[in-house]
Length: 109
Image (cartoon, rainbow, N blue to C red; front, side, top):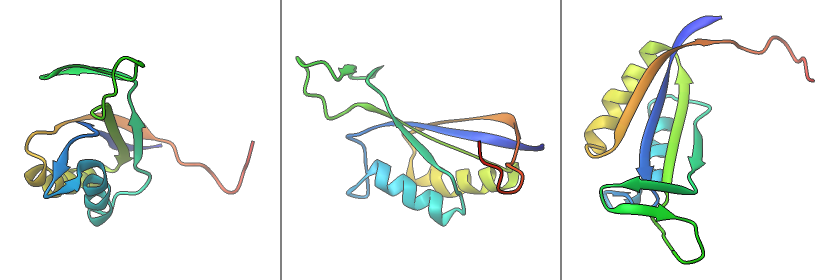
């Protein structure tokens, strides 16, 4: 096991950064920052400044919540935050300490 950080970013499908969909822009920024294994999760419902966003049939929301998550060493995550934060001033980011357990060899279950 090795110590690391988990970085999570909260945004919505409708967010844009410099005329590029925020999700695409964030994935590009993560790649440029040297992050690997970035996961994106799409929410089925969320509530923000502009009310509730839902996937219900009565709501055709294109502003569903997205969560971008990645784990890496503290140095890599801190470097990524310094690159990402100036371009995403309105996106909430959180980190917490973790222990990274790497797979050993080519063992498959």
